[in-house]
Amino acid sequence: MQNGTAMAFKPSEGHGTISWQRQWLLHLLCFVLPGLTLAMFVTGPHDWWIAPATIGFISFIVLAERLAPVDKRQPMEGEPKWMFDLQCYALTVLQLACHVALGVMASKLSIDRPIELVANLVGMLALGGTTAGYTGIVLAHEWIHRRKAHQLFMGRLLLMFVWYEHFATEHIRGHHPGLGKHTDAATARFGESFREFYFRTLPAQFKSAWRLEKVRIGEPTMSNLDPRMIKHRVLQGVIAQIGITVGYYVLWGPIAMVFFLLQARSAFGLLEAVNYMEHWGITRANPKRVTPVDSWDTDNWLTLHTLIGLSRHADHHAQASRPYQQLRHFEESPQMPRGYYGTILMLMTRNDTYQKLCTDELKARELGPFRPGLVETADAAE
Image (cartoon, rainbow, N blue to C red; front, side):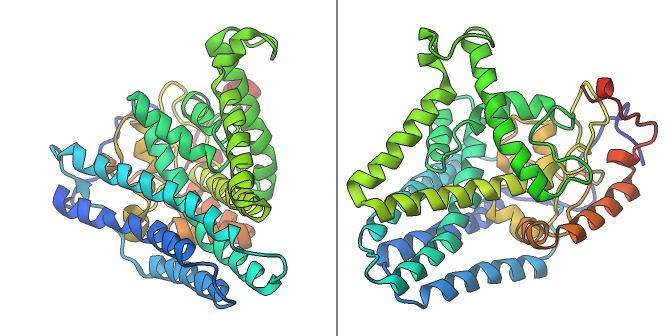
């Protein structure tokens, strides 16, 4: 294995390329989940059958991913970028429509009909919570990496609807430069369980984002009452999130507000599961430069086309400015046990198995703690 400290990585060859027309059509699969979610909300409330139906659909996605082939084809250069941007704009409108429809549906529920209430709650969490995480946050992630002000705003807005606006600051200015270092709150450490990571990363990422914004507008030691805090984006996000929550209560009632908060909790839980598996056990080989061996990938066809390229996360970190349709496959990147859907299910329900499989992968590729010459010291981690 070449350890990446002195080599130049090249996209893998021999797997062919995919035309932009076919690629664009395949990425239409990302509309299925939010489309079904919107349909469920608009036609609700539903009877008891909605709970097993939505759970069954999510189970079907996991099974379909398990049976899906690998896709190592490389994108072609010169595609009309506006067509792929159009997909993102349409997805943004669809996701925001889902948030509104959630409130409208929940407003029709009553605690006097407990079976209907619970069934719709389960259905909302299974489908709506998954959509808010897999579509809303994945899409927000794409937008916050863009340079245009309105695109950044759309990313922040989508994050506000899942109570995670600080991710826009922490991910870009904290996680990307700190990837694979002991100080990065979003990098799961070797041997760390998902539960341990989850309760460590939630407060750590928020604190890091809060500090980064203070640095941007003034100084890290400035008072929270300083007038300059009006420009603090994380504070703006918190205020906006409180306002959105109150808005759900005022417009659609207490049940809608509770449903909104629960879908947000489900969504950012999925986000942190993604963070966990994208970087578990990785220590950066090159302290000055992020390379394609510093993140986990999956070659799964279904994951690639339903999550707008998120599965090629290694190239995203190596070239953060690349839009989703231009992300490439690298043979050197460590591979997840399954696609995103199956791997998340595994790490949440069988974390020991997940860690064993990932440990074997890191050992085979001589990455993470198995990297030749690695010296684990506090100084090196910095």
